[in-house]
Length: 445
Image (cartoon, rainbow, N blue to C red; front, top):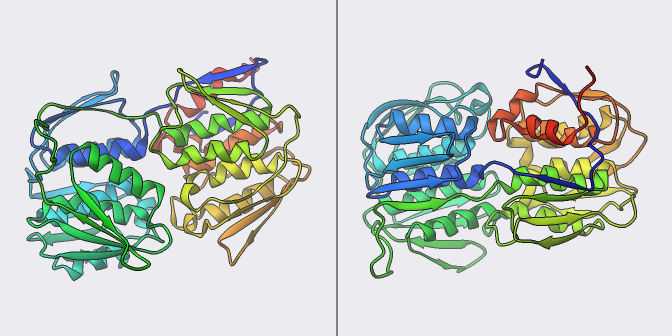
């Protein structure tokens, strides 16, 4: 059964793989929050409908927001309330959505009210402690009812009174994005001081770009090793005649999802085009395509989307790469590396051990299961992968969508690879294996 296991089959004999992917998870969930802060209707198109986004929508509904959801058309219309929560006494469940967990916690703390906050078992294991501590320091009462520093918890807030808040970006840039997006709710705005190694990170840049698109003003300075963002209070844009009523916003295709297909170019020696993905995307994972170019691929941005071509030689070299700023693709790069002709080193990804699973350990464990030589390096913040004679095996996915999708790629080249619990992909790309089926040889009757 599909829910239990998926055995990967080879690709069809075709020169070009051409697919479409859903809308961006990162942009969808930011757009849902920013739309709720508007003062009129926002129509979002190209919306991703997945476990994460449905959890976010469910929370907004419990909070009293008016929603018109059309999954078939991939649209959501949200009646914004200017930052006022319609139901200030609510119980919400963010599911496994890290974005909903972090963004809504800060949004509700800044807006004020009494909230019972719950999450899936997986999300309850992920870190919330630094964000909870930040909010407690500005007067929010948070009582963790399970493990301290984690979901579930009860939050009581009368709003906050702060001029500046500091946040470390090393554990999760979602903490920083949450504070940035909620900052306009405060009467005098807020200075958000970003510290750590990812102050200019891709996901922070997505947040800044989207806030600008929605009309919020921010000013950035670099007084020391940190980055300080001064974010103005609501309302908002200096553009004359700019109105937020009946605002339309189109969501880009998910570049993270596209990367699984682009990885097929070197692994399977195929040309790949993902509809609607272009180099002007605001998503940081677009860097993955450039990383594949360092391994011999070549790219061209066409009207339909980026076309990636493999190198002339079927075999391609490994690489030495810092993936700190697009670490969601560390698993995908590991799959590409396992099929390369020379070793690969992936550096500066220690933070992925605290995501949906301990992703660094999962990479090492599952590649080793396949017969590849893989070990952690740099005090467990990176990995080195040495291609070896791989063989079929059943891949444990740790309830992690990115492990499932990434390791399916190796199965396109190595027979006998089965992905356990493929349904975990519903978190961000629920029909991934259906799309994979469409480009693979049919299963034997």
